[in-house]
Image 1 (cartoon, one colour):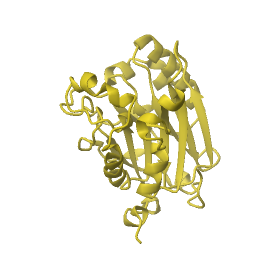
Image 2 (cartoon, helix red, strand yellow):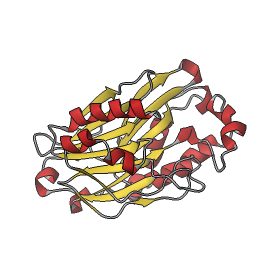
Image 3 (cartoon, rainbow, N blue to C red):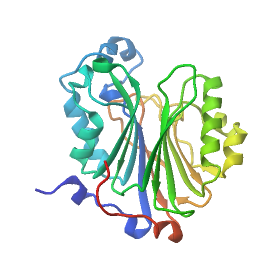
Image 4 (cartoon, rainbow, N blue to C red):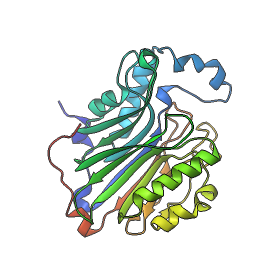
Length: 272
């Protein structure tokens, strides 16, 4: 039987890496503001079509090499006890996956960030982002070793500006000593807000790829989901994908790695 990994192999051999970031919203179909109220029960209870939605999402994710996910459930009542990250990794043919549990509500919710990858990370670190309430975090995946390694951060920032500032300060300190960096995720702030945060750009020359409106998914007006790249990385134009049930649209990009960075990356055995 042919797997989705065989249908959509990684393109790293050509020096390209296809990235995607997506706030999954636990697979709740949201296509109007009033759904936040009328479908709020789905944050607590399972929906009979949720597994079918995950399979549709998995087919889209399978076209990429590295995927960062936010608001994915690690297995609770609302997800029918299914670890959504593991299910997506298996269905989409990703050999490497990692879950960061940010808010543990026991059997009522396992709020998580997630990483899916066709490449083997040489190191994974979890960061608990500062804030008055727990529940925001970042996954730091390193691909390769030494100063030419690729560092990828999957982030989900808070809503409040004061807390966002503290979290961006924290991320700035993390990326200061690094050379090849990708920061992507639901940052919950506009490009203007990011550019106003001087410490982020002083820490490392991060250039935002052309901002694209990703929220709300049914009538996108605001760019809240971002992919930021260090100046050492080149990229083709960013794009948003079609509505995939969530209140956010997926954001995708194709980046080109420097030869020195490419030479350090291991495409070997699984990491999970």
